[in-house]
Length: 160
Image (cartoon, rainbow, N blue to C red; front, top):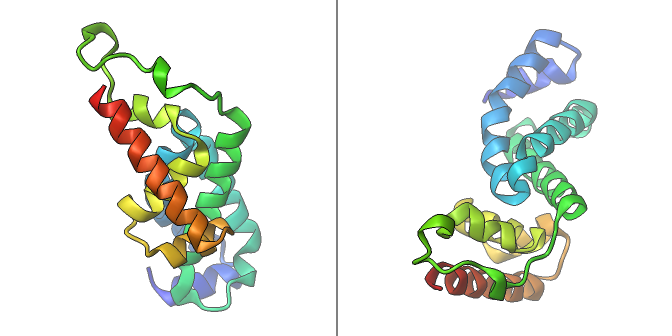
């Protein structure tokens, strides 16, 4: 995405803003979907609204994707927290049970929004722990412990 497009959108060019948001939407979907699950599209919409409203505050157009990623993670976690219903891992169906086989989405639904967020940032986005900590507004040690617990829970649920 070009810096000129970002600057034009910041300057009030409606077509540039439309193009910018259209280009960002699939990227935001890849971030919000695994965190907010069924509410991923709501999280994308909230992130797009926040980007639209706050684009003027972005100082470096080259930082657009990182800035948008931070907004997307924040919105996805916020929406997932609001709609999260905790399920104990012991309640997961057996993988051999054909009618209720565990798939990735099913396992992700049983993780907390915070655990899904750290998995997305570290394992899908490939961010280092310090960057994930900055985006999630938690200490790096918290990211490490959440990641460890999330991976352990995911493996346990997947293998059961």
